[in-house]
Amino acid sequence: MDEFQLLGRRIRELRKKRCLTQQELAKKAGLHFKFVGGIERGTVNTTLRALKKIATALGISVADLFQYELHSSDPKQLRKLLAEAIRRCSDSEAALFYRFYRSL
Image (cartoon, rainbow, N blue to C red; front, side):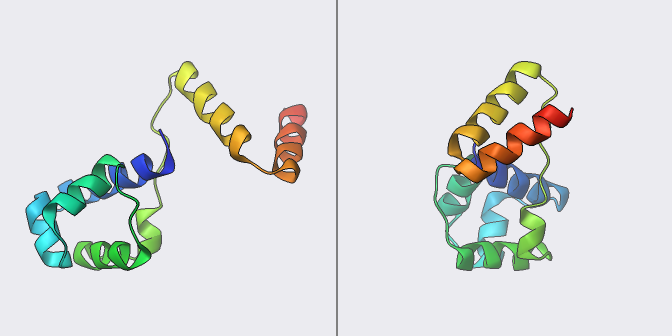
């Protein structure tokens, strides 16, 4: 699951906790409901401005939108997530990953 999907899942989770439909959230945020749906599915590359509108409509800060956790305890999924993170990281970050791994 990439960052867009994690963010979308977090927004969906927060929206549902507030018993809002996508249409209701979109209206409160001043956005189109299809755009909100795309964000929740992780298929839309949104702007910080749109995230601010969504956060305000949900009564939270933008930072709260990124307080998601990896809910997977499946070892295959965790390995995949780690491999993707390592592939995307810089050389110095890869060295940090390696030092962390060796310390375990």
